[in-house]
Length: 287
Image (cartoon, rainbow, N blue to C red; front, side, top):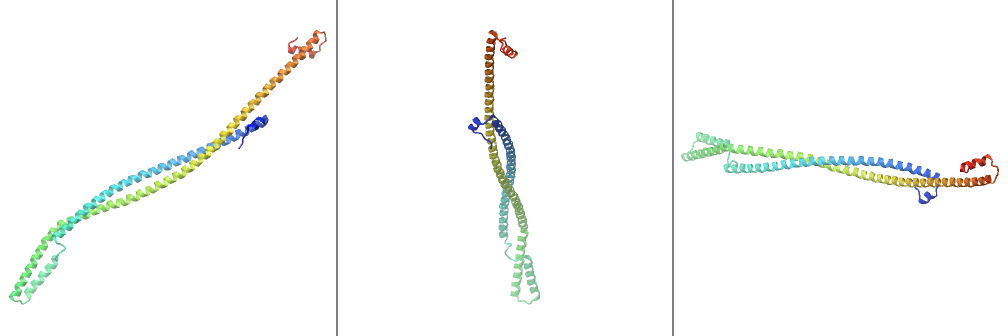
């Protein structure tokens, strides 16, 4: 750093001050150039910070849009699951009403009837035994018919089961969309956090560069102020020298005038004047 104290300013010679002014000017220009580069670097970093913030904002908006869709699919999924649950409850009620889970199936009943009829046809039975067997066959046939009627009614049950399963499948598709969109939203959230982190790092770097810019600029300003002080002092010295030169000339003129007056007095007293004396009289206007 080039500097100058007030004592140096008053006591240094003109030549020393001229040299010092040049050093201050050169250092000031060097510092101004450095400050300009740092300001440019700071501005570039601030621009990058804004880019990262904009990037983070874009990820935020995409995340929010996806989260809105997630919420929409969640609501649809929940509504469909509730609808499916109601349908399956109706299925269970219908099964209970039809007692389809109780009793034998038609094939089993048909087989039992055939066995009983075969027994009737092939075995020698007493009148009482045959009557009981016939009643048993009739009971099985009645049970078979009732069972068949219930199964005929089960077509509606099958349709209801199919509808319930379709609704449940649609709910599952919405759940898959919830998972898919939530994953995408999370990715954008992570990218947003990363972009904000990078923006903070770049902003810190920009702030540090701004401090260095201020440091260089303040130093440049100080050197400029010192340069101006030296220039002012040089002008004062120039003025002093000019005044001294004027004073010296005035003294020379006064001396020449006095000398000319003496020569003129000698001339009036009749003394002979040489050429040099005459020229002195002419310069002062006495001849």
